Length: 79
Image (tube, rainbow, N blue to C red; front, side, top):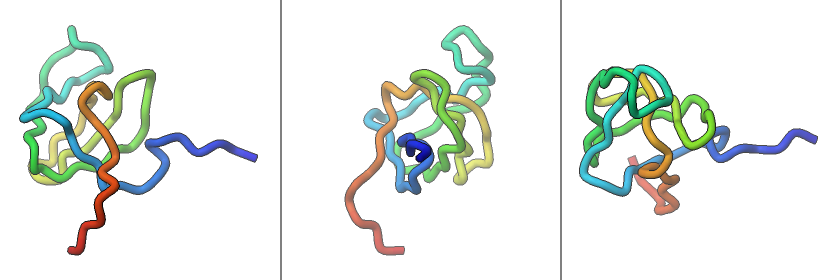
């Protein structure tokens, strides 16, 4: 039976800081493509180590963010 990773479960996702750099690769040394601000909605596509490949649905920027700042928001959201 396959295991379910955190990134395979549906969101909502949130960040635990004011903003996180969106990078071109899963590395702090890679090019910054944009900034994911608190309050932006984003989708997590997959995970590599402690990095999440995301799409910032507020701005459309796709890239990698550090998993240090990302968590699943367990509160119920009514949309």
